[in-house]
Image 1 (cartoon, rainbow over the protein chains, first blue to last red):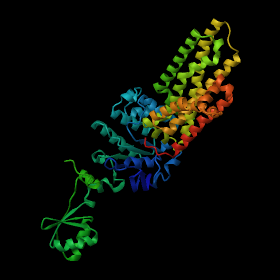
Image 2 (image 1 turned 135 degrees about the vertical axis):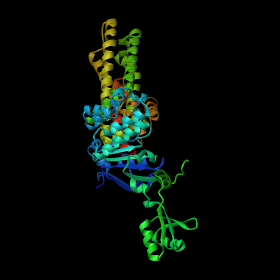
Image 3 (image 1 turned 30 degrees about the vertical axis):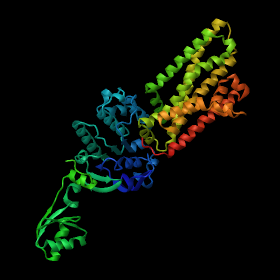
Image 4 (image 1 turned 180 degrees about the vertical axis):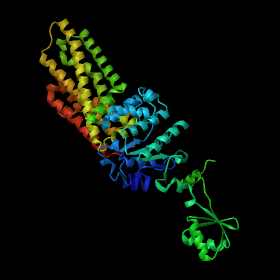
Length: 298
Length: 242
């Protein structure tokens, strides 16, 4: 059973379809990056997984159950949704004490998580005076409070300096290696590229790709350049096998939607000699921009 | 109980709670002092003196009730609050408990200031006090009304959710709109909060023509709990994007 699962989830706000028939699952023991441009529906999906919003269709499940049925939620799932979600007049420590009291968590755990996120010294200051990075760390402390089996973090890297990013990465890796489920959203691929084992990419509320980081970076789904003895015949035969073909100059073909083995076998059937079969690896960033349909800024 | 503790920490960990109650009690003391200086308690009766002194505290408690829920939406803490209790209504039960307690404590503080300041001064000046029974019933009415005012604010806040909108709605309804039905023929006005709180305080013009003290209390309680119930049902059904 996957720890988190979304089945045919749709969420409509008025005329806007924020999430559109989205399905995926998230397993334990790894860090899953939840990627998409701003407005792709990441936060909506996370809120549905937490039972904060009601799906228009489909369902979101935590440990196989609807989130509203969780009996001890803070020990099951730790959440950091927005770095700004604090009462500005309350101190960091009191914010955590409020949550700890609601979940029946001992006060000593508050001190533990404050130390973990290195906020012990600032804990009695009002959140009003915190930097964005400090708020992010306080939000993380709140997520870790119940020693939950699942972590759901919405853009936790926002506002962190490079040092903070590294610290976050180490923390998430450690949590995953202890067998926890970690779902981290981001609109910047570079933020999760070094942390995530698995990537879920969405755009306009729809699933664009779900793959391991290796699959995502490897040529599996990208194009191959093919040179052969009879490019015209091969180009004719490939679409029947579900591949997309484009010409690359006079002699070469660019083939997508298939893999090297399938092209080689087809060529053998047709008696065509393959001269070159090169996977064209695009960088992670390019792949992401390509998948989400955004133009590269450069 | 966990949630009630959580709500209690929320209330005592922000300055707003303390400053609003502090200012309300300070103004109470000032009014009590003014009364002592200007009028005879025998002429106006304890109810007038008390009624005048409660004014600002009533506003403060109504607003505190509103804030107890709207700040959660304003500052985005609603998500974490309701995450700890996915059924949601236990949070509103805890908030109701916390606000009733705040109102009761504020009422007792009011009584302490009024009884500890105004009564001795009146007594030393006039040599006598109204019957103890009369004073106690006025004080009891004030304590109960304070608790119900907090609950009333919570109910309006849970329905409206927007902080400024809810404060305006609660104050406008309670202090401006709800006295209006009194102008209508018949006794419709008795069943609106403004007149009901007058009855509950034992205000002569309310109790003599309209409901008695206890009936007034029940009417105000019905309003407060009714609004709270509507707010709770709405929050259970609503999407929480804050």
